[in-house]
Length: 183
Image 1 (tube, one colour):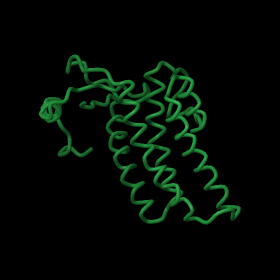
Image 2 (cartoon, one colour):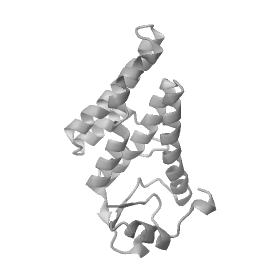
Image 3 (spheres, rainbow, N blue to C red):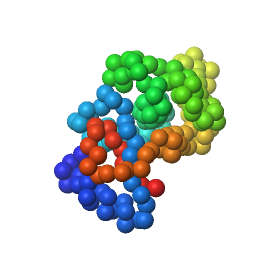
Image 4 (tube, rainbow, N blue to C red):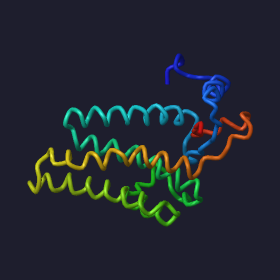
């Protein structure tokens, strides 16, 4: 994040508080360092924009890949918050997206959301492999866009609703990967 776009803690709290909302904190995954935290926040925003652009340009495989990156981060945050992250590491564990969904289901994620995540995963797998074998046309993903596109914001909102805790003291901020939301 460029310096001109960074907010101080006081500025962030003032801007968020001006809307009458209260700050909550979502703790990210433990392997995130201070330098990673800033990069990941930027990358999540960039991924969202790039996914929109990829879809608009007809690059559907890239659209699906970018969507999975975004979803994976929120799945891992959920697992960490629910105490099911032991042995995992986004940088090294090579956990598949389907396995992360199963882990989240066992950690108590809502069944309807798990179903939608499985739909995203099966669509991705089918889309890539069936295109190769000519079982469908490249633009066949367009029919699934209305259902696919709501999953990333829905997952982020769900995880925030499930795991965010009220910010009790601004001095407690500063752990790498913390996400502050106002609600």
